[in-house]
Image 1: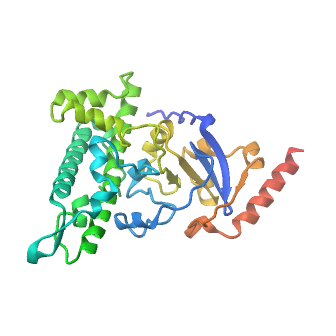
Image 2: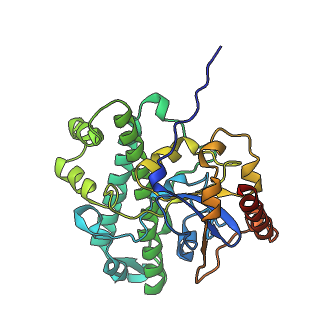
Image 3: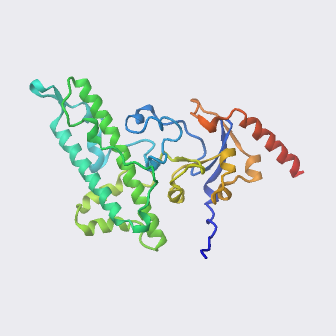
Length: 316
């Protein structure tokens, strides 16, 4: 008979219970509820997911590792700096193209990041290679046309900007895999960034390039991340959530009636205490969040106020 063990507690020091637009969130590594991501991110992610609050969904859980403020600096990512998108050349009767040196540089970066991701996947132990059933790999930046000719300079710039933005999910996917490898290292008592040394030993990447990756936003742990919203009733990446929290990613668990009644082992881990509900923060935002579907039940606010009132009465 297989014996099941309760999940270990989540780090309470990083936890806050928040309320926004009548919805309760149990948050880790966050002290507020963010607005949805910028509309331009819908260029390379499923339009049904963005720009709703579920931008890091079962389709793209790695997007939680996307930097809040992407910075294309350093040897590896510096080639994506904004001015590169404005370097347009005429190509005779074939229209206009992105400058050849920029195109070559971006193709090289795309190939390098693809090779990095492939190598990171290869370093994962077999029991750590399972991913959400619905997860999709990020689209390649080249699929947005930065290497193609276009009818006008404006079309070239638009394709270049979309292609440049499309490097962000690729970077986030690499971060996602690196954090999995760091978790494996912690569990085995290994050096946390053992993956970097392993890549050097494979001699597939120059050591200086790997070092630059470690200094970039792909790996830098001081980089603020977008984070993820989690609904226990539908989340397929709970296996990763503890890693997300332990390595500092903001995580917001939705605590609505549907989640409260979900028969799941995580329910007791995130259930707000009476004290947390009594001291809950009331937040406002300049831009209303998209709280469509079950998230935005207009009666939920009344339900919670009455519940809190009853709790206070019972405590006496």
